[in-house]
Image 1 (tube, rainbow, N blue to C red):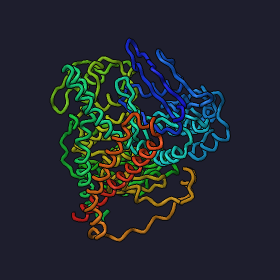
Image 2 (image 1 turned 180 degrees about the horizontal axis):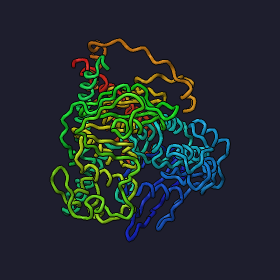
Image 3 (image 1 turned 90 degrees about the vertical axis):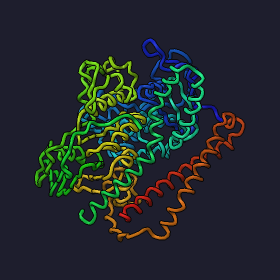
Image 4 (image 1 turned 90 degrees about the horizontal axis):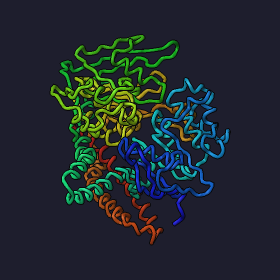
Length: 600
């Protein structure tokens, strides 16, 4: 076993009068691919700052291999301090030397970002791309990534995934993007109540490992007092709810997609809920031959779309193609240049946008939720504000905390709590997943799953779209809207193929291939597909059993020290088996959905 590149030994960091971490140990080895997970406010970003050497320790020590480069890609890099994106990307910061200009230019070209853009007028996506160019050009031994996919569009996320697969160093990543984490990571660091537990499984297998660990902890807690048991139950409620609802929600979503597919045809367990007002009209939004242009630029051309009550519409596409413009058109905030949009008069909408404009600085959580009082009305009944906070996984003691003292993710949760108390039958979400932790994402999925109204959702989170929407509208900047019934994976499968020699986002924009010919309509599952569908449940069960056996073997803390070759072999087997299980589960869902749609 080679020496780690970096280690933290019995470190402690104080926050206010208490400790955020204490007696925390961590190591990062060569080519580690680590997911760092934990609740908002647990200290994930702070821990990355400690690893990067940007935060002074109150206890313990940080040990780094001589001449090793550790680079942090911050969640909010200080781009505005510089005249242009290029000035920022070439800055030395806390590094011994600045990045090489030609390396910065190379990555920036692949990402499609103009480094001569003034920093003050650059979009969030442009700033993020410039920060990625700087971080990669520094050629770090350890790359620390704090929500790297925030503000990136789908093409940039796919590019970053490919680049990190080829990365020769180690990386630690914080992200709410499940697909991103599952595809890239091999081990997981779980930050929980000031401790870090390491699971030598990638994020794709982490939740099963986490559930087992929590079950063991719960058994131990039974021997302690009732107060500790209640605290542990509260901390676990988001995870427990996720276990119960996943498969049922997927089946429900498949049914809704099949029903919606049949409608379009040739013509084209968390205690959370939204206060849904009555909606009488089945068709809630009807767009007929809609075109919108700004000057000579056409955003949408000849859009025809009927949105029914209960539809969950996902809007995807590169940054700047008009996703938010489409939202505003469909909700009546903008008038079309041509065509007509008819909106049901009974619509009561709730809008959650990226800017968190409703969270006024200086106000407390109590002010935001209950206008300074003790009670909030939700679904026609009053709830104590402290109890309502629990439903959004907050410590009730935060009721009088100032908004500016909360993390970005906690502020997003407060905004969700405020808006979801209002009566509505149209939910409009513009990039709602930014800054949310994974358990809050589960709660948001729960809300959308149970919501009886209509949902319009802009997101670059592929897994979130797959779990929530019944229809995807894809925009490409040409004015065309590509409408596909299903989730993100369905939309992606039906996109026109990219040229095999595409090497960058800029190349992709120049190499669109002709659209594939429409497949012949199926009337039933083929014999081969039906046989595969019949055999898949047993195959999936066998793969799950194998994963459990491998995880149990790898859980032995002495295996790595005694037999590193055997450990490496089992780790590789585990990763391959997980990938196979994910592929087989996706195939099962695909065949089930196809069978349901054909039978309807």
